[in-house]
Length: 101
Image (cartoon, rainbow, N blue to C red; front, side, top):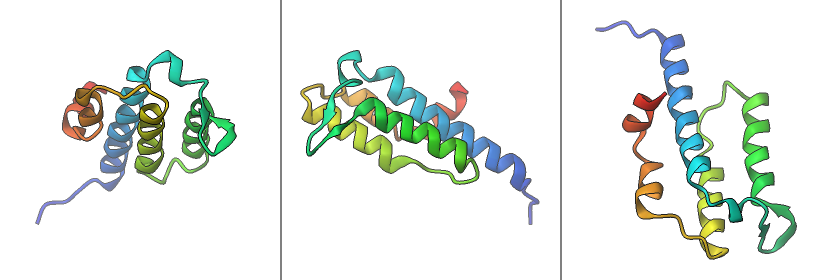
């Protein structure tokens, strides 16, 4: 049986997760950031991104903010800024994102 360095595995996983989120933010059209969330007019896409940042600061031990990334992708589409297929597919290419860190 192989010994696994759990500390390093956690760091590597966080880096990949972070890269996927950064990839989304880098590819989100500028026009989407200030848009209001349908049904929650006091919230913007920028605020959801801030929420992701705040959650990471508070819960750096907790991995996987996939739900919030998915919410931003969905909002971009609803607001008329559908992300290209290579971007949305790229959110699931964790191996590729991990090599970009």
